[in-house]
Structures are given as C-alpha cells and as structure tokens.
Length: 420
Ligand SMILES: *Cc1c(COP(=O)(O)O)cnc(C)c1O
Image (tube, rainbow, N blue to C red; front, side):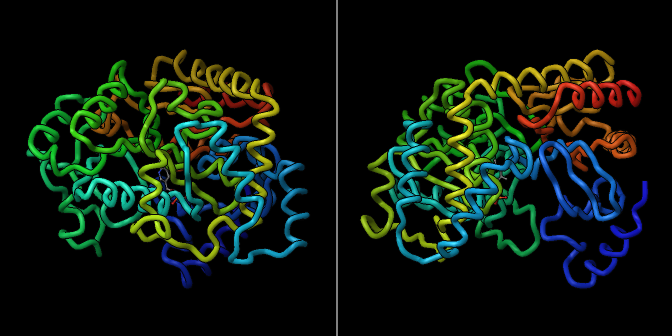
C-alpha cells in the first residue's frame, strides 16, 4: 500500500488547517495513522491520491446511501448548475423537496432548509425555546447533535444537573441550561423532569444512537420519552440526521411508530451536498420569522444545487423502496460475520452497524466505552491493508449502501474473520 502522496499532502495541509483537516475525525487521530487523501469515489469504492482503491463503509459519514456519484444525482446537479448556483430568492425546487420530505415524514408539517445538521439542531432548539418560553433542554450522554455551544456536553455529573462543556471555548454559562440524561435509562429522564419539568423546553434524542457507535433504543424507551415530554409540556425532538431516510423513507419515527414534535434531518437529505432540514408541528414552526419571532436565516439555505441533489436522491429511494430490504440484508450478513467470531459485540439495525471490541452488551455510553480502542486501531489497519475503508474510530457507525455488492460484503466478512 503506497501512501507517499497522502503523506506529502497531509504534511502540507497541517500547515494550513488544524490537523490538516476540516473535521477532526478525518485526521485518523484515533488510530494514529496518516489520513488518506481521497481523489475520487464511485459506487461503493473510494480511491486515494496514491491510487489505492477501497470498499468504502464510511460513505461520507452517512449521506451516501446510494453509493458515490450516482449517475442520476450527478447529472441532475450538473444540469442545475447551468441555471445558476444560488439566487437568495425562493425556488420551486425548495417546495418540491419540502413536499417529498413531508410525504416521507408526515410529522414534518412545516420545515426550514439549512446547510448542516449542526445548524438544523441549533435552530430546532431555538424554535422549541421560542414556542415554550422555556430555557432548559435535555440531551443524552453519548448522543451527538453537532457542534453548537449548548450541545457540546456529554458528561453529565453524578447529580445529573447542569452540564460541563466538553470543548474549550464554550463558556460554562452556555451549557447551564443543558441537562444530561442517560440513554436507555428512564429513571434518569424522570428525575430531571420531576426536578425541572416546568422549565424544560425540549428533549432531544437520536432515536437510534449512532454517534457512540450504533446503540438501539430499548423496548419502551422511545414511547416513554414521548409520554413524559407531553406530560410536562416539553417538545420532543428526534435528531434524525443519520436515521432519516436511512432506516426507511420515514426514518426512525416510522420504524418505531413515534411522532416527534420536531425533527432534524441532514446527511441523506442533501444527497451529498450541504443541506439539512428542521421542521415538525405547524404551530411550532409558525414561531419562526417572518411568521413568528424566532430568528433564523441563511444566505445559501435551500440553494438550488443542494436542493437538486436532495430531490434526486429522495426520488430514487422513493421509486425503489425495496432498496431498504436489500441494504438491511447486506448489513445483517456483515453483522453475522462479526458475531460468528464471538469476539465482538454487534449492534445492527437496517443498514447501520457497529462491532464493539468488548464482550459486554452495549446499551449506552458507559458500556460503549468499555471497548478496546487499541484493538480497534489494529483492526482498522488490517481492514485498510485488505482494501476496506471503515471509520477510523470505534464510536462511529458502519454504513452499507445500495452500491455495495454481495461479493464486496463477502470479501469484507472474510477480512473481518481473518482479523478476529
Ligand atoms: C452528523 C450529525 C449531526 C451534525 O451534522 P453536520 O452536518 O455534521 O453539522 C447532528 N446530529 C447527528 C445525529 C449527526 O449524526
């Protein structure tokens, strides 16, 4: 495996960008290697600047449900470019995308398009606060909702009161309204609502957690948080930035039959372009300017290029809903390969999976971090050397796309068994 060119580019990039990258996990710092600089990608494969080609299970961290450079999406985007890249004025395309989103997720009665999942979550929380006139929010330890100030907390103290920021540069006062509960632990949620219920604007959750590795909600957990939020007049926000259009066209809310008040979408909804959505109940969304008093805006929001990529991706998925069974089959074959070794604990749902290097059942953040991350790093290197690109961190999902072939799944399963 030649890595000369990646190494050169990495060294030069480190002079201009922190860690040589524009998002930290890309730097491979978790696995202590030089990141691969990518030159191109098509279908299920990705090629680096030294000419190595890999079967890709990162899929740009989620958007790539159809694989890379789907010809229909690429062609639609190319066509759209000729009409101008952005106008800062409304377009029919935004309405088309909004109708498709609403059709897939009827709980999203009204929505706004933004440019990243981070922005979607930040704005949804502002709308929830504006609507309820309350300041506090509840999030779960180990759930990721982007990098806005108030959400950069995971470590709830033992007392489960105000959270301490995870990041330098976030004033403690910015997170003092963020309460942290434990995923899959009803008591931890109940305790917070009993103590602060009248002051809580919303509870935000990844209905299937996918940012501490994939962790499934226990039976009854999602119905419980639906009920307790309602009981205290707080809004329930499903962060479906990963699960939206991934677990099915209707996302986790359809899969589990729960109707959240607000939903955030990202990744797949942009088909590989910067695009995200927040939306939900009409009465809540009508609080947003210019109808209501909650401010939110964006120069490039809903631009025609990202909108086109989103529309075309959703159309392809809607024309062929059997794709969800196909990707689920491939993912469960992979899950079975990991499980059959008896060496890892595997969580899988639809086309999302994680193999944790631990023998403990992984049900929350605390059990996820029992994983042997040093062993994960060796596994990562083994996979790379066998032409397979997986996430350079234990705490990320493995994404299976429509483009992965059965031969590629079999080859991957073989490499997994050889390592374990
Ligand atoms: C990726 C992600 C985000 C943040 O989205 P960005 O587009 O990276 O800002 C938010 N929530 C979840 C669940 C995510 O997986």
